[in-house]
Image (cartoon, rainbow, N blue to C red; front, top):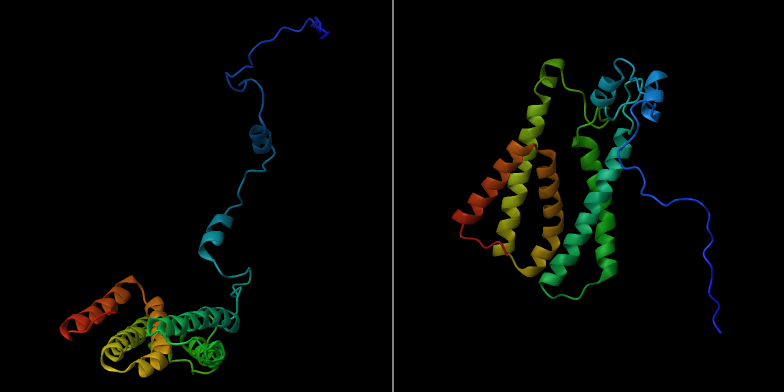
Length: 212
């Protein structure tokens, strides 16, 4: 026979919890922290945190020019590898991985040299001489003009060879041109980058070329 349990009378009455919120007469953890000054921000610390991004306490860049160039070069080399594989798939050519890896490894030092020389950084490049002080004032504008010309040239020439050359020439030239085009656009601000893409679009339209 099944036993019947008898409920124990504990004398504790059941009721709903208090959902009215904290008692304003009692101090919370935030109130205690504010009294002890734990929430106070030192004067000038917030401005330094927002104005000196990428620099240490001494005003030196956290990542040196070579370190930043290596990071950029790795990303662009991976892009070169991806474009090489995509072009081979586009023309239904057998992918020979050792050839693609060989071309990728050959492209890395060239990309590293270009990024180290021309990518802006607080530390000047040892490969290029420092411009005179009067030219440094327009250095940012010269940087935009230089990469604008590079992006338009690389983009238009890439459109031209994909429509006029054979598949072998396209397979050889498309990955480096694609990397150069994308890197040049990344180096530009929104105004110059949009202008370069518009120029490439005009070249594509007026030349009667196909995008794919």
